Amino acid sequence: MTDAADYVPPKVWTWNKENGGAFAAINRPIAGATHDKDLPVGKHPLQLYSLATPNGVKVTVMLEELLALGHAGAEYDAWLIRINQGDQFGSGFVAANPNSKIPALVDHTDPAAPVRVFESGAILVYLAEKFGAFLPADYPARAEVLSWLMWQMGSAPFLGGGFGHFYAYAPTKQEYPIDRYAMEVKRQLDVLDRRLGESEYLGGPDYTIADMAAAPWYGALVKGLAYDAAEFLSVHEYTNVIRWTDQIFARPAVKRGRMVNRVMGDPASQLHERHDASDFETKTQDKLAPAE
Image 1 (cartoon, rainbow, N blue to C red):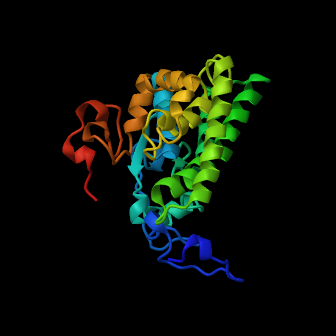
Image 2: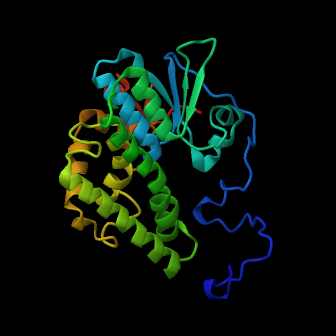
Image 3: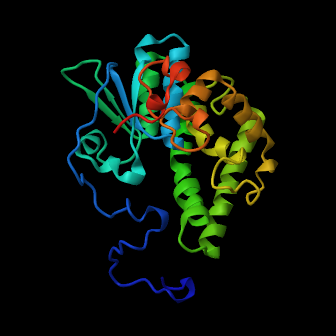
């Protein structure tokens, strides 16, 4: 690999398949399916295809919170998409999400006209509107929640694809990109900390989809669960973010949602697939790691 100090961008960029670090096997500059594979469909109208990355956790938390409120129609099947194995490039998944990113939701409430929803923020809004929960109906409260939701959607790439990539996953460590993205992530944490110093939750006094979107990213960061970077970023400084994270992570529905489609960490914290509420209590090794 060329030393960073000697690198001069070529006149025309070309794809080097070997130059991708930890994700070289799955990143590519073209869209579309690489193989034919239909998506499985379970017994519930809501079919989720995901992995317990921060973006995936947003949706499983939302679904578990809806069920906790008594919305029986929010029952769902959660199918595991192993992105490190290229499941997101199967033809069925690409049909559900042309961008080949998790999560993707297909709503079969009307079997004759299934609705696909992709992008985690869009899924949160879709579910909030479908069930009339976790998104205020009236303005200006609704505008505040949607503003913080869009803030998270626009900010997370700097945390994940920017800081997380160069600090944790890049094949070489380079000062400029790490400094650049560390500065931006700390600025984002300061934005959150200031907001949470004046408001219990991001959108105001009530817990909403804005909190469900941001907590899996920034909450995990301040709790030392992302990129092994808590000390590097001095996250102890953001006391309001820590208070908010502890409050959210203690919710029973959040605890369940964080387990679904998880394949890393303590096996007791993993439920690879979820097809019924009883899976949390009666999971066996077969349910933990279902047959391919």
